[in-house]
Image (cartoon, rainbow, N blue to C red; front, side, top):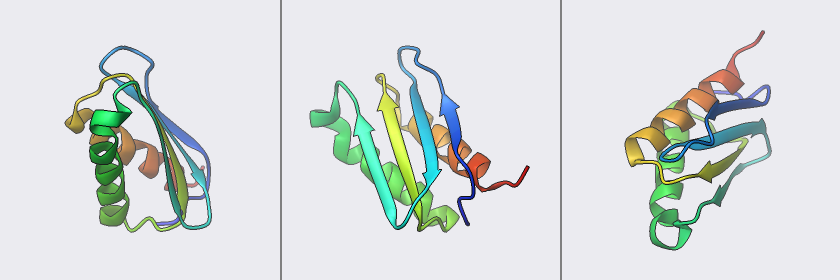
Length: 88
């Protein structure tokens, strides 16, 4: 899957997150979270798995977490990646 444009998914609400995807060279994952020390590796692993499942190899995925559960994290990442791959 090719990332051809910028896309966003999620909200700034508590227990949610905002995922921003932009075209990039290689896969870069940036995580901002108050619980990064405890859950940063898990969030990164989820992002990498979703990107791999969708065949995304070149993108910048920025995650601003506000205490989201893993199922929410995965859904937001997948949505942002799918939005970023569609042509208008």
